[in-house]
Image 1 (cartoon, rainbow, N blue to C red):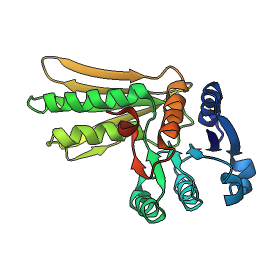
Image 2 (cartoon, one colour; image 1 turned 135 degrees about the horizontal axis):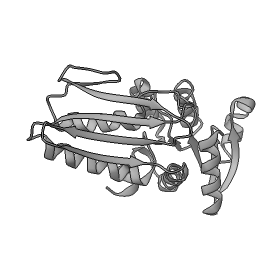
Image 3 (cartoon, one colour; image 1 turned 30 degrees about the horizontal axis):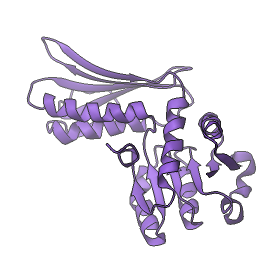
Image 4 (tube, rainbow, N blue to C red; image 1 turned 180 degrees about the vertical axis):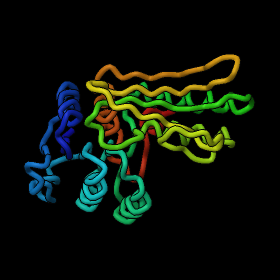
Length: 237
């Protein structure tokens, strides 16, 4: 498989390492220093693009890949206000697209646990909150993973009407606490509290390899497919 890396920071380099270990080839690396190389002629050399940049450039990067006819795996977060437009572009261009707020296989299993636990806890009187910790270079807060966890919880605990990234005394708000501590790759904690006891589930990443491995797995999955997919499709969950 020939891969174009859109974004060649720490995640891009981790993806490159995993992809080469699995026998794939990196045919294009795009970063701020060579943005002009992100064109149709160069992207045509690849079978798939993997995009890990930032909230400000992700939308345009995804759009260009789809319009250039290349399947794209996106791991950038903080751009989902443009989701409906990307969905329309993928459908109109008969493209192929995978987005996940987190490509770690462990985190996606954690998502399943979170949903199951929220269903159980919906019957009982516990207060729920989320905490996420990342390195200081992470641009968005809360993390996309924390938002996904919050949305899953709110589907089942209907007393929570919205999430907030601040301290809150409003019982209808699901509080997400964001901390930025170097060199932390990522910890997410979902906590249920009562006057009697606490219940917590925690996922801690030790390094970026888990995210990179999942992104390469998603790239392998999308070859030959059309439409919009997520990690549940990739993992068969």
